[in-house]
Image (cartoon, rainbow, N blue to C red; front, side, top):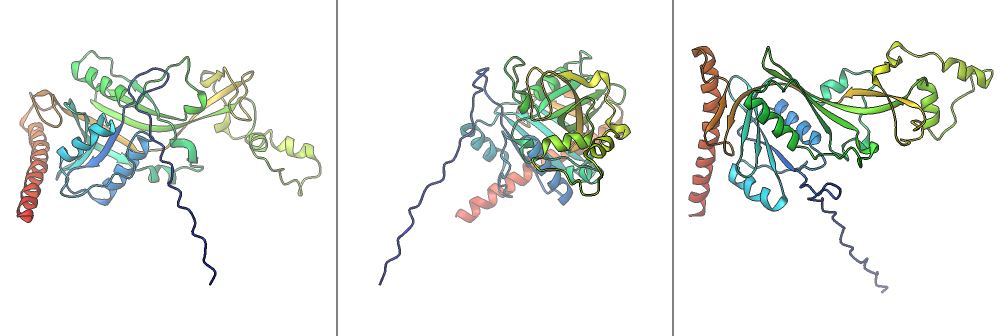
Length: 335
């Protein structure tokens, strides 16, 4: 009998993510996005949207089990170089988002007043844009309205600035700037608008049909046209949304793609990707989801608002009790 040759097993090459920026020398921040307690399906999808937003320096397929507690995530975070936790939870009244610095804090607790999933935003758009390489690089971060001088807002600014890698404007590549996260603070309502956009550049004065013709490698369909000039003539008409604002145009220092040239002006276009959230800072703690309270929104207000703060505190205590019960159950099973 003819023996079949066995194919040699080739071990796949696993590329490890860098821990230090090769240009600035700073430590690259990494994150875990997970939940505490039971979440409905919609909030589970919001959790996945937040993981995609934090790419590429996050665990997209992080496996969670009911018996996992905060200490388990903290023990894994050290060897993997994880610097921040984004923790979703829900009480009877509202969902909450905690942003924590590992391993010793501080922790910022936000109440989520409103939110929209990335799928909902894409469904509302005529031409949703999400290319494959959109999440290959971390997003830029822009903070607006936080310069009021209040201490808790300064801490919020530092926390969100450090949750994404810093950039050097002298060495950054324009091709890596494809996304932006915008946080706008309204001092009247004390709410934070959280938005996630994709960035694209378009040459000024060039219609959409001409841009597609230059970008594509295939010849356009000219069967229904009498002459090539008809294609160019029709390409001259565009929609009102394609009118370029002078304030939104830039001159590129280098060529970007086949359309945007350094010698010409390009218009900066933002298209929302999601998720979208409206947040309110409720509490700032010294430690990792524990310790002294540095700031509390409901510390010196009426009893009605104090009730909401007590419900949020009760949600944290229920998470801790659930962790203790699960640890005790595991010890009983081992015996």
